[in-house]
Amino acid sequence: MSQSTAPGTDAATQVFVDHRELLFAIVYNILGTVADTEDVLQETWLSWTGRAHRSPLDGINNPRAYLVRIAVNHALARRAAITRRRETYIGPWLPEPLLDEAAPDDSADDRSMRSESVSLAMLVVLESLTPLERAVFVLNEVFGYAHTEIAEVIDRSPAAVRQLAHRARQHVHARRPLYRAHPRVRRQATERFVEAALGGDIAALMEILAPDVTVWTDGGGKAHRTGLRPVHGRDKAARLLAGYATRRGTGFDVRYRRVNGDDSAVVFEGESPYAVMVMDLTQDGEQVSDVYIVTNPDKLAHVRRDEETEEEGS
Image (cartoon, rainbow, N blue to C red; front, side, top):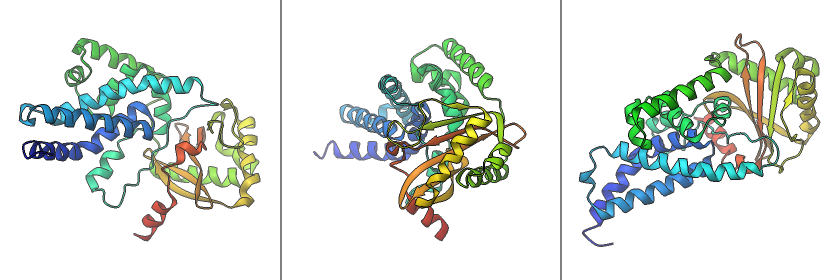
């Protein structure tokens, strides 16, 4: 690397590092997968450093806005590939769960930014939006970008962005009421549910499950005991969930962790992650309305047991 390019490259690297967690959070909420998000960040980095090589960064008045624009447009392009993969996916497709714990060398700001991911249940709803609607919803509703700022990011007029935002908001609110249970209520409900499910207690499951509960199990055709479609209704759901108890003797270990901002259960079999279980509650917080179970090992590859050990020992 020549003397003339090194300073500019070093400056570009530092700017990217300073904004990486913001970019990760935005892109993850648009895509719903960690692996694709990391790929998009790599593409963003290459675009950014290529720009730095061609001309000085001094010409960019707002590096943050510039990076967000690059990342969002790479993410929108990546959505097409994700859609193609989903067309041949075996069984229900769920977003890749994101554990909120940060690496030991992450700063407090990094941990706060990464936890900006919306809930797994909300990500499921966002999957039904068009790519542009989803990008606008994430930027506006989650990260507080104004319509005029979003217009510059996605190369649309402010009027077009307002229309996209209106459609996305209507669709999301129709499918998911604006309600979020208190963390303590969620934790208690999660523990009750997991104890009943892994204990094979059908009576307790019938009590905690809402009559119209839906269970989504994403094994991607690579895990045992996963259905090819969501299971609706309390009776069927209770029988399905109690079936997990038959594997209890093989050595399940349940750890309660925050997944996409919500208290959830991470089930380990030995040292390997077996499932991430996320519950959505009814508005009164008394029963479970939806259960999301991810057992596809590809989607659990980044879930590590040692994170819990470090947390408990801190």
